[in-house]
Length: 163
Image 1 (cartoon, rainbow, N blue to C red):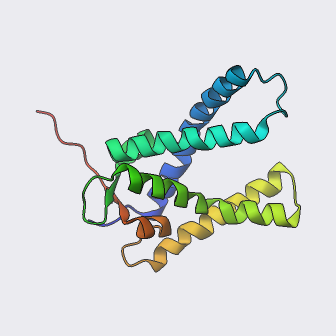
Image 2: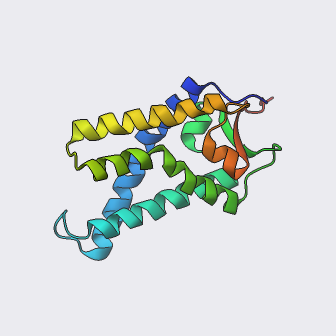
Image 3: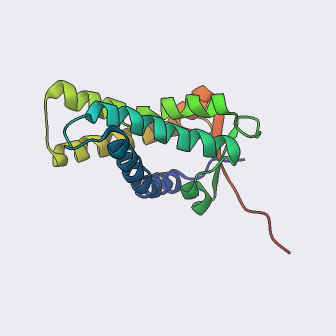
């Protein structure tokens, strides 16, 4: 089965970001209450690690359970292994960790260059994401690099008809 188009996958990524805003806000609230955080600039490293773990649990759980997040269901995209089977927890974890390659080069570039500001950060992240997405054109089945390494792939998915 062919991979969904690149535009469709990027639209799903944007929608996923919108949905994750709520997950990150709830994680921040739980962290703030649990650590009795009184100031936003205190404990930021702990909050970042906690959020990273919460997002990992979110993705690993959904990918290994149904092969789809809510955004993937909306865009009718499913994650499977290279031979079409459901994805296990270890493979889903590997995919989650490697999927950070969407953002890591841009973040490292910003850190290394010393550039700061929301406009520069947004431009760097957008450029990095589009460049990483363009790498899918180099793969024979148009899959992303992290999927090729993890033995996973994204496919079109149509829900079963209800009678």
